[in-house]
Image (cartoon, rainbow, N blue to C red; front, side, top):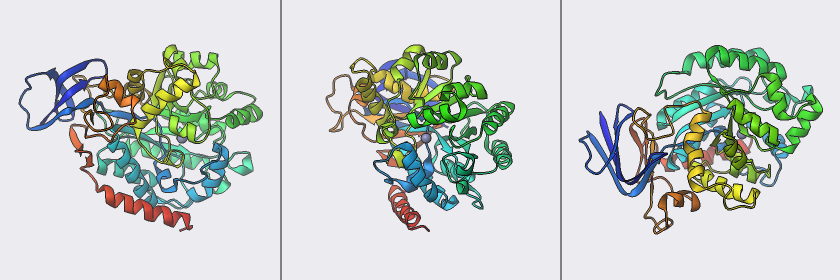
Length: 444
Ligand SMILES: [Zn+2]
């Protein structure tokens, strides 16, 4: 089965080709060219669009779609303390509805590969991880679910209440079971499992160490939150006598199989070290601004040669899951942080949203439109009212707030066409998430 996509401008991640086309077969890109195109079973023609590599979401908590708008003016720790009790009420039904909303919004923003960091497993609520994996299959999203965890409750000096943390052995056993059931290491994989204890203030050092050993035994990646706020830095210095990144080095949580969410409060030496050991950073500008967490030193990390991707983070601290918007936000925030319009240019922001994220997730088969790579492509209109006439239309995708994607292809399958989801009913998802959010808020 072959699919041919033709676009007014084809941006491969390194080349910009007018009137370009991409030929895909069985989920893989087999030919890229311009002008006269070869025959294919199925055609998508987008003369008014820019086609680019599908966007990669390097950090998220999809369950949070059911708890948007809480603590609108709180710090991370205030926001977490208020939300933990609400999150203890989630079950597989809530998660399924929330994940459908999150994934729908991601796909409509041009995202084709996403991780999800799920770390809330209330006692006696089975099927949570399975609900995520099945929803990604249903909507057609390439997916890297993280088996997250929390093991350090309030009674042991952690931030979360004891009711929402799990037992050490149970976490490791279930994580290993999820790897066995869902992890596909093959090139072109649609599902890879990640091991992801939540943060320095919600898991024990023993769990961090043993999680790293478990992941390395199975050849899967490691993910956690790091250096998100100054409150976290204070917690680490007081409890462990180390800064957050020093703690990660001490726990064996550095290297090219690790990526952190946020990485905001890093000093010069830590920026250099992170680049050197090839640990990734998932920058989440909207969430960081919403929580007043600070601004990641993306331009310094990029200059140092670090792997930097973009994430929407959970929608309880973003209120959306629009990955294209994060490229726009990242570019603007970097310029504010360094008071320089040259801090981050549009193409670098778009590279972070694609190849940078793929590097964080360990995917050398995603993030670019090249022969042999996965057939994951996003097309954005350059002729709509918001974008028509912008000089340098490719830069315009990051300079102007993004429109929804016009066409999105994942693994050679058209999942968004004419700005509409093909794999789910958007209005039905909106009705379901409204009802589920209301029920959760009432305590149901
Ligand atoms: Zn997060």
